[in-house]
Amino acid sequence: MRHLIASYLDSSISRRGLFEALAGLGFTAAAAQSLVAPLEASESGQGATKMTGTGGELVVAQMKAAGVEYLFTNPGSFEVGFFDAFLGQDHTQLIMGLHEGIVISLADGYYRTSGKPGFVNIHVIAGTAQAAGQMYNASKDGSALVVTAGLNDNELWSDDAGLAPRPGFDQKEINRQFTKISWESREPRSLALMLRRAFKVATAPPGGPTYLAMAHHALEAKDVEALILPGERFTPESRMRPAKDAVERAAKALVEAQRPVLVAGDEVWKTGGCDELLKLAEKLGVPVTNQGQGYDNFPAHHPQNLGRFNQSHKMLAGTDLVLSVGAPDFGGRVVPRGPEAPLAAKFIRLTANADVISRNYPTDLVLAGTPREGLRDLNEAIDSITTANRRKQIAKPRAQALATYTKESRAKAEAAARKNFGQGPVHPDELGARIASVADDNAIIVPENLTARFGAFNFGHRDGEKMRVANTGNGLGWGIGASAGAKLAEPDRQVICSIGDGSVMYSAAGFWTQARYEIPVLTVVSNNRNYQTVRGAYYRYGGKMAEADRYTGMYLGDPDISFAELAKSQGVAGEKVNESSELEAALKRGVEATREGRPYVVDVETARYGGGADSEWHQKFSLAGTRTKKV
Image (cartoon, rainbow, N blue to C red; front, side, top):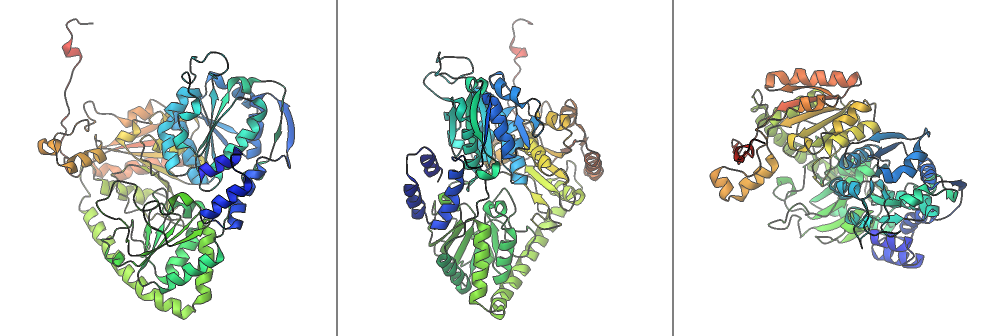
């Protein structure tokens, strides 16, 4: 998809050629038009205002017209033309991070919570390279970020300049695989146009980061004339409806299926389709599995929610139809030992992202459209071919069986978790339950902790359900910035970041940003002095490390890190919790601090679990001890 858009914008293919290619991917003419119209609007001058100024002033003016609320940045000298123009404007608040990775995660958390594109400016080639880990996370989840940077032009005079691409290379190549499209702009008259393209491509479904490097001489150029367009001209909401005949076929297949299952992905949340998904699931009593990891697209504690798809689930045995809604194809985490999907089942996919169709597993019917529109049409089609009594006959026995199964499963899980309460260090089961108990009903939880336990959280989209904002890339260093970005997006909702100790050390400078801008996030650190997820993989491998109970590079003690003190050094108050009896009171103090407008950190000494949990071995070394001179 992104290659088609890039080719169209570069005039490599015609409008007709683009429509033919989209038709080949299953898009109707109407759906293709809804995708292409905004692209064409971004290239036209209709409704534009003519402006003359420096290149940087044109960029700032186009930012304002796009409705940019926050500029997430770590500035540099080659962006002087941009920041000089930024001074004195009153429409965009600057939020500074002390490392480019934090800057990207700030924008990412803002986008994932608000649905508005995050706008970033980072420093030339070095800053671009340092942002790559979080650009990877954003690209995995299709986050609509517009990332800009200065460019020390190595094609202007010398090709071997400081903070410029290496001779023969260009800057945009660094993160091309993490963006939908990357550009370099050297012509000052094109800066506003290129910025509009970056916004349009980032927000067009499926969303994703774009990158625009702007040459310093273009930003500093004077008396430049260009058109400035209002944001609605190049970032209109894209709502694509699937073909009517395909919807009718899908509705008939769902009604006739004996063991259907719904697979929900994050496109559901992003397009506002959660209510329609819930309606469809309850209409026919269909079990739901959540393939999205960024959001809970279906209420976590709903009796028809079976978690992630697993063919060993009793209630999924013999599945004969899979309706995948806005979800990635099965697979993609690790190479499976066998098929993860029921190959004998019929596959129907509802998505606006053609890239996920038949990537690993077959597809029998495509509904090319955005999930909210497609689910709405599908619900109406089912109602049109069935009576209320027929739907009840289908749904009731399924729903009753699912409710019995999930109630028993959750009761067993809760009983097992309670056995781990009252320990010191605090077990993750108790930590998760205590956070859930002090959190507001509609709190936003930002996790970066793969071995935490979240079973006590009633995540979902409805009133009284907590919102989970996570990432699927698992590139460490995301959570502290992302939670601050989430709070900027939703200042009147409680935001709690649940993060592992290893993750904190990739992004601890984010506490400074929280303190400077008074962003009241409660950060709860699970401090087990271990890279526990990696150690688990080492143990399961069953090699020499597991046999010796020595895990290379896994122990993070000696010396121990005080995360409360680390945060305090940057202006964020906090405390350390060593025992279960101290936990609830500490969390309540943290909640009270955030209600007063201050960020707070609770550093919890947390128990390790699983194979190798007791091992604190690490390879000892003292450079000081090897010296022959005391220098």
